[in-house]
Amino acid sequence: MSTKTVLVADDNHDNRYIIGQMLEVNGFKVIYARNGREAIEQVSAQRPSLVFMDLSMPEVDGWTATRTIKAEPAIAHTPIIAVTGHVTPADIQHASSVGCSDVLTKPFEYDDLIRKVRKLI
Image 1 (cartoon, rainbow, N blue to C red):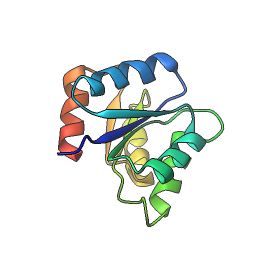
Image 2: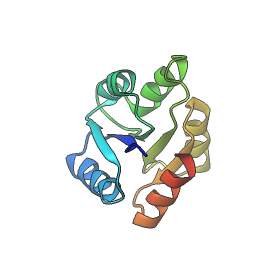
Image 3: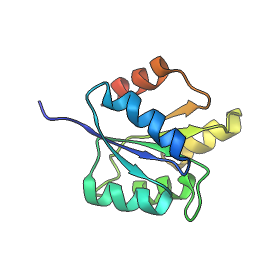
Image 4: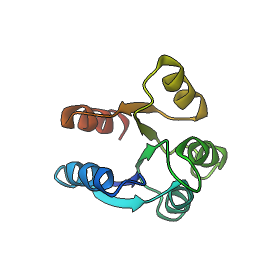
């Protein structure tokens, strides 16, 4: 079985590192993006099995990056988990409406992150 690749898109280095480590110890290959523009480029070029997308990032935010990815037929199938501190029901509905498959709210627990990954890939 081939190793699944997961993209972690977050402008905060510590958040990228923590999520990346959680994924790597579970056997996933992890690639990174520092903003939504890089996330779109990485999804197009690398075709990851899953994306963790911070919603509040510079250049292109996660909301826009998700909409852009979901509008491209070749990559629209890519599951995206929003990683966010935006936790109101309206925020969660908005994440779903732009194409997020699930939401991981900050702060999150290791078990929640892995459960969501296993559900989607």
